[in-house]
Length: 133
Image (cartoon, rainbow, N blue to C red; front, side, top):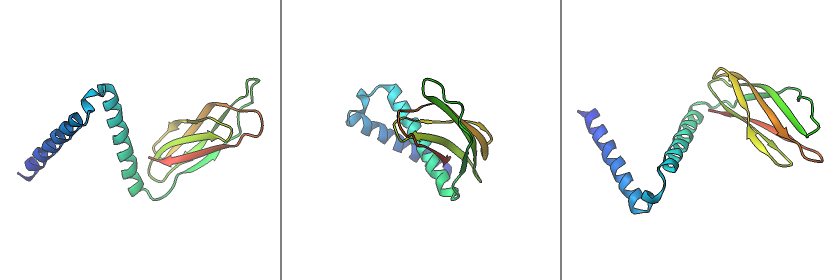
């Protein structure tokens, strides 16, 4: 009986939230955008849940860069490990540009790569950050 009441309460809260969105102009928003916003919110909620559980930061290593081409593009790769779950690896260039590296491995250990990092004239400092799930 308690489970049934909780499901009914959840359905009532969802209906109230839908009515609130309609009342504040949410109905004029395209469905695709609402769905992507909900997905982003769910992803962030999942990330926050894991951060509450996983108190140890991931470890990231950077290997040698690939050869610099004439177009000023360089690739980086390395390894990332975590005690529970690797979330993602991001890179940022001090002279502009940022992105997310691709991961290949398991939840706790993976190889990462960023194939096309555009370098700018002058000194470029590329910062690589690993994040928990």
